[in-house]
Image (cartoon, rainbow, N blue to C red; front, side, top):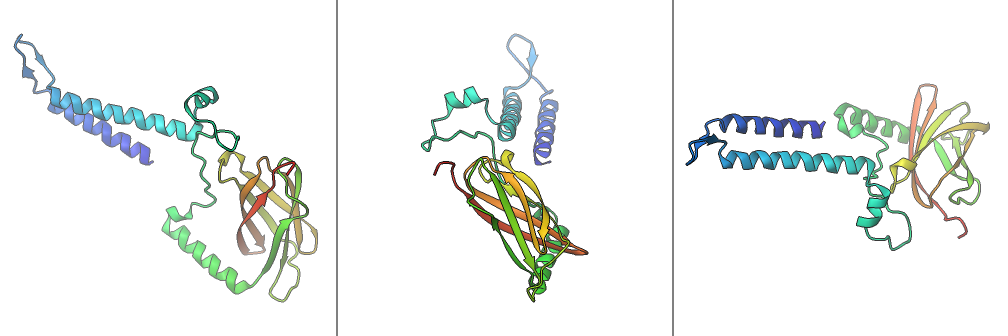
Length: 214
């Protein structure tokens, strides 16, 4: 949307300048042409539009692998170069005031609810291997929460294309788990959505995955 607004403003500016430039100056040879002032401004805005288009394309798709290897320096860690903008956006409620207010209300309700959650791996978390991720839920008094529906997402801060959606199933009262494989070592952000009847409970956590062979 922001990009579209910029393009619209630039194009309107170019159009207005072109209209204004119709009052052409007379050159020595008797011919009439667009004044160099408006012409330079029009060229400037066309250049801005072109550069913005290139930046957006690179941010979304990145450079071609061969071109990236030629233009960008080798990473000191020996890893792979990512030339697109990764980012990690688990929620976008901040874009709308009503959604953000609802989020704050849910957080307040969660604190008052007093649920006890324990989450983590069933064994060593190593990149490239099949992992078991578990969540145990109990109420304020320690009683297991049964029959909940749990979905979530593992977010990779360095590469949004590696994000993984998950859905957990109940294996015993209050214990939910799923299996997944994470391709890269390092930090992963975790977002869980837990629903029980009309209750919605959200969890934001962080975990670290070891490199294979370490």
